[in-house]
Image 1 (tube, rainbow, N blue to C red):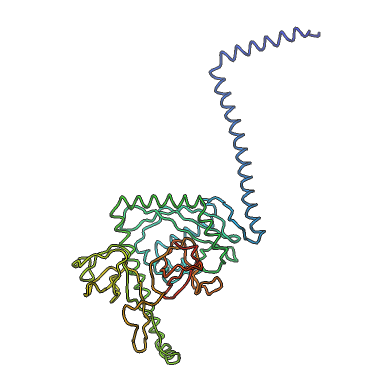
Image 2: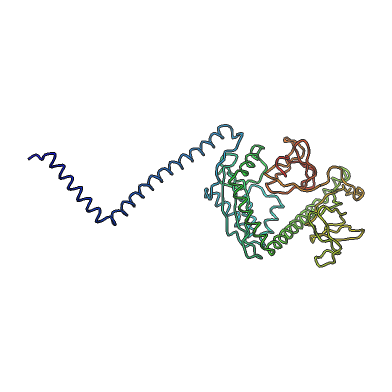
Length: 424
């Protein structure tokens, strides 16, 4: 039997009224359920949208890198790719192994993790290990490097020393490359070109790196400002390491000289008299006490102000310098002095340029700090011989800032040059 439309409508209204009554009676149960369903739907939509955004972001990043590579690896500007934390397990393992080896002074392991390591840095690592307890914090951040499969690695760390209770914050930067077998290593060698150094400089000045650096610097500065014990500990530690490094380098030089005595004497006969550079004047780089002997308990004869210059009589292996002060012998801690005047000494008959004669324009006038990794060259030209590589933050002995865009420095006892754009 067919039911009329009015009957169907009446039945539907009755069902709706019944549903309404049930909903009112059970609203305390139904409303939370509906709310939960809405939340779930919202979360699903949000996750899907974020996943699409992430995928699109990765595509943009990859496209930027690919576009740069297609242009031969050169670009007018470095693509701003944000720091990634602990993003590459192999690099994380490399850095953790490197720092673990530093703690125990395991130089054999360290030499397998870097391509080159100069003698001075090797001695510094080995001597520092005697004071290190651990690196309780190692946060590893990366950016793509200037060449394929290379990375700029920024380390936010905390360093725990045996003689100080609290870990000390710091930041270090490494250039990590990959060899033909696919193994990552820390690249210290001077084998890139100027465009690669420029890439590293710009990448390290991007906002996220600056923010990370500022955060660490604020933490470090606040810690030092609030703790006189830490301030003194760091000063003593620095002085001790510099002293040890100097002693070890001197021993190595003496050993090499002893081994080459015969050869050296022969070459002197062939090539004529040999000369060495000797420091004759030093300048105070901080306010420091002048004492009657090489001891912190000796009588104070006076106080040197920043910039005060003294005739140098002798640099002593114990970290003190013997100088002339008011016509008499006096002593100042070497760590508070820098060399400003030099003479060439004839090693055959020991005749030398008269004392206190400044060597023309080659006198050190202060220091400059590398603001990025920069090559050190033998002449003020990008085609001249490469003498080494100065790393960001490294201090260099300044002779003069030249008008041609180069800065004249003293490097390993020789005149050298760096681009002025990369030092301050």
